[in-house]
Image 1 (cartoon, helix red, strand yellow):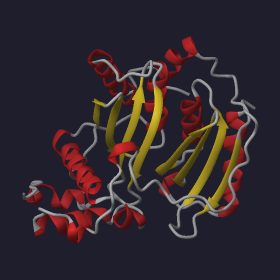
Image 2: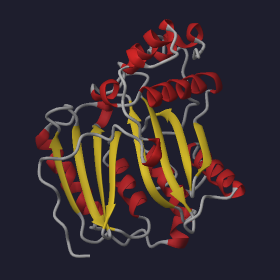
Image 3: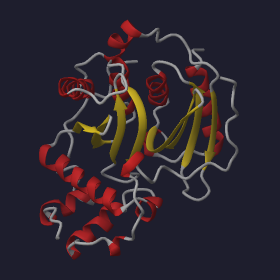
Image 4: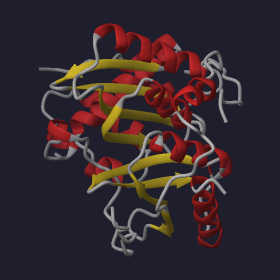
Length: 304
């Protein structure tokens, strides 16, 4: 079966050509609407960036030349589209996910609005999000999820490191160990969209449920430059507690960092995040500065 993506319509845009003339996003304000026994931070043998989505979406990665049913024009467009991602993306991410992200990019182009969807997936709900990557995005998204009392089970994030700098996110969430109701899903999606537009006060809503001034417990951070994928990475580990993900992403926003890939592990009452990053102005982070950033993030998370 052939897959049609409207190649002629999106080719230049998807490759970042003439991006300023054909922007996929509605301009946003640069101001966001907010402001167990201890286990050691792992050594330098950190896992590779999250190249597979969580749970049953994971599939064996096939070379694009083996992806069945693709037109040659679509295959060529996909290869060129992938060049905006880090080097590991085309090699390790499944062709199915690559195609899905290209389709989401096309939807961005057609609608000029962030793609925000919440659909049932077994006993959980899957939040799909696509937009132009900006440092405050994750703070707003995770703030809304915290405000609605959602539990996060899985995180998949693929961000581009070259124009048009899009990011594609999948989050597996639940509420009360169940998938979200249709009404709750609609409200969450609406709140995320309002937060991105600066019309939903995430911090004010969270302040009702949490003491945002209280720091996290048993926080450890570490910075390193991945020698294989050539990306700066920040390891954050802390005890599980309400508002954890929001506080982490808020600290990342305060440091003006851009997340382009993420690994998440929750185990024995601890949460471990490895965030692959770009620095201010979408730049690479030198190691000497990265260590300062890691300590700065740690101090923020401790509430100091």
